[in-house]
Image 1 (cartoon, rainbow, N blue to C red):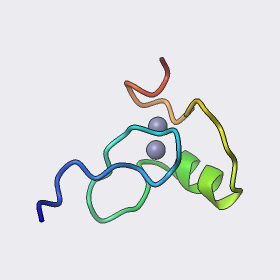
Image 2: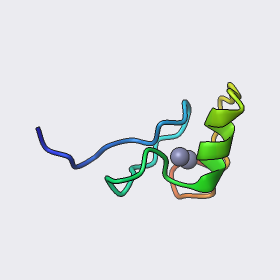
Image 3: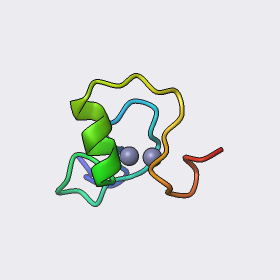
Image 4: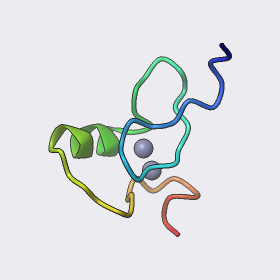
Length: 50
Ligand SMILES: [Zn+2]
Ligand SMILES: [Zn+2]
């Protein structure tokens, strides 16, 4: 399987990860750890703030 295009583990986030991390940013990691169910991701990456 290709490892490209893996998405962030945070529900609602459409960002791609760099491959070795489960989340695109500390923001998403914290959000997932707190089990937040946000519709909108606020990690600040392009494509997530629409
Ligand atoms: Zn995001
Ligand atoms: Zn993310």
